[in-house]
Length: 354
Image 1: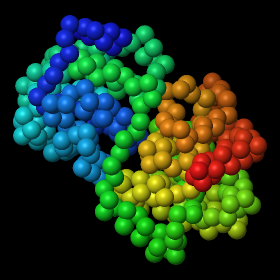
Image 2 (image 1 turned 120 degrees about the vertical axis):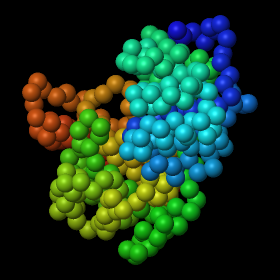
Image 3 (image 1 turned 90 degrees about the horizontal axis):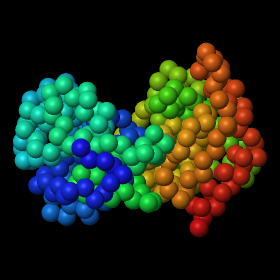
């Protein structure tokens, strides 16, 4: 076993080919990018592959810290993933997010070093985890980005004091992104990006908050609004409500029409992003877009976007026992003060001008 708090255990492992496994969602994949450069620095002679879902591949185009991508697809079956491990001669894997499917494939591919947290290793039915990492004392309160570093401790990867999101979106997608704007008569970079989606816990910022932000932008920095994110029943209801309450501002609905890499380029050129959803917030921070991140739920520091261009605004509200999420979301959203929102937007716009 390895203790994440102890970086001086017997000897760091230097595998020939290391796979960083992150087969989960959009926000988590973006957040995991903080380890790529540090892993490359710690293991200069190791080939490094990132295991993700194929739809996120465009965010890591010719990334200098990795040698390639491995795609997670349960529908293709276990053998397909085993074949990918064997094709790159992988001998080590780090579960940045534990997956039983990935663990089974690693076992069948006879990977020598497989690192995971102790709690995940306990659920490993085939005993494929060979390096059990005991979480640090601050594990439960650490930002999610730092948990990625902890599980890499057996390979001598040091935690970064100020980790940086590190994406390389496909340059070809930039044309598609600007084309999305051009076909609706939008040009240039003088626009704001709003994301009205709920976060992973189902919490969302009420449309009225975004409408107030739009009103402030109309009065202080005339610019159109581009709405990005998912196109679901819930998000459509919030989007239509936002449109009904927002007057005098051109609004372009691109929900569900952009790939992750196109979204990245749209954020890279925007003057400001306003989001209550993690993936868009992390992506904005990664692309150095001034960001106002809204938190309906008063969470710990585990999920805050990283980066010096981020302003976090939260309500301090707490959900009552058995209170329906929809009721709580609306009650908490009303707690976003006009003064806080105006201050955050003014600061974010000033950052883009610097």
